[in-house]
Image 1 (spheres, rainbow, N blue to C red):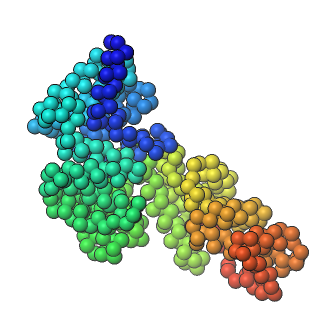
Image 2 (cartoon, helix red, strand yellow; image 1 turned 45 degrees about the horizontal axis):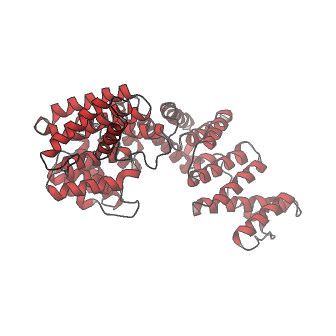
Length: 468
C-alpha cells in the first residue's frame, strides 16, 4: 500500500467515532492510574457494560504496546454486542470496528484496517453519512466510556447523554447516564442538583439499583435521611451481589457513623471482587473510623477496652495494607497506616509509611495534612521537637486548608511560648515567632501568660492519629 493510500487511510480513521478519536487520555498523568480507574472501580461492572469494558481495555492494551491483546479484547466486545444487542448489532458495533481499524493501522496491517473502515462506511451510508453518523447509540457508548474513565471526562459524558435524550427523551439507559453524570458533577466544577435526573431515571427504570443508591446518598446530603436510608435498603435487598450498589450503600452508612453496617456491606462486595483495592481501602477506612471513635471517647471510656482497640487497629492495618499491595497509588493509605502503627506503638513501621507517603504524588492539601500528622508524630512519639517545628512550618507554608493551617500555627505558637517561658532568648522560639509574624503581618505576643497558654490544652499521645 503506497504512502498516499496510507495518508488517505489515516484521514478516514480520524473521522471515525471511537476510543482513538475521543482522546480519553487527555489530562492523564499516568496510564497505570487510568487503567486502575477503568478496571478496578466497582462502578459499571454488570454484564450490560462488558462490551464497553472490553473496548476500553483494547484502547489501554494498545497504549501499552500490546496490540495483539487489544485485538482479542475487541473480539470479545464484538461477541458480547452480538449476544446482548442482536437487533442493533451493526450500529452498536461501529465503535468496536473503528477501534479495530485503528489497532490494525498501528500494527501496519493496512489492508485489514481499511476493511474495518469500509465496514463502518457501509453502515453509515445507510444513514447518509460516510464514516460517522449521529446515532444516539454511539453517543451513549461514548458517554459510558467517558464515565468509566473518571472525573476528567464527566462533563463530556453528560453532553453525550444530553444529545442522546434529544433523540429519545424517555430512554431509560440514556436517562440513567445523564443522572449519573449529573450526580458526579454535583460539586465539580460547579454545584448542580441531580435529584430530578436521578428520580427520572428511577421512574423510567425502577430496577436500576445503582441510581437508587446515588439518590439515597444525595438525599442524605440534603438531610432527608429517612428516605435516603429506605432507598439504600431497597437497593441492597434487590441487588445483594452488585458491588457498586453495596459500596454506595456502605458509604451512606459510613456517613451516618455506622461503620459496622458499612463494613458488613463492603465485605459482601469483596466476596464478588476479592482483589479490588478500593473495597479493601474502604473497609480499612471504616475500621480506622472505629479506632477514632475510641479516641474521641477519651481515656476513661477506653479503660478495659485496650484489647478491643488493638483488634480494631489490626483489622484496619490488615485491609489498608492489602489495598496498598493491590494499588500503591491510592490516596491517604500510607498516611493512615503510619498513624495506625503510631497508635500501636510500632514506630519503625510508622516512620516507613510516613516516608512512603511523602514520596507519593500528593495534592497540596494532602501534603499539608501529612506535614501536620508527621509533625505530631515527631513531637509526641519521637520527642523530636525540632523536626516537628520543621514540618509544622512546611505545612503552614502550603496553606491549602485554613483549619489545618490554623492548627499548625497554634502548635508553633505554643512551642515558642513554652520555650520562651524557660529561656526568654531561645533562638528557635524567636525564629518561630518571626516566621508567624511574617505570615500574619503582626508580632505574636510572648507575654507572661505564655506558660498558661502552653498548658491550656492536654497533650494527646495519639495526636498523629486523632488529628485530621
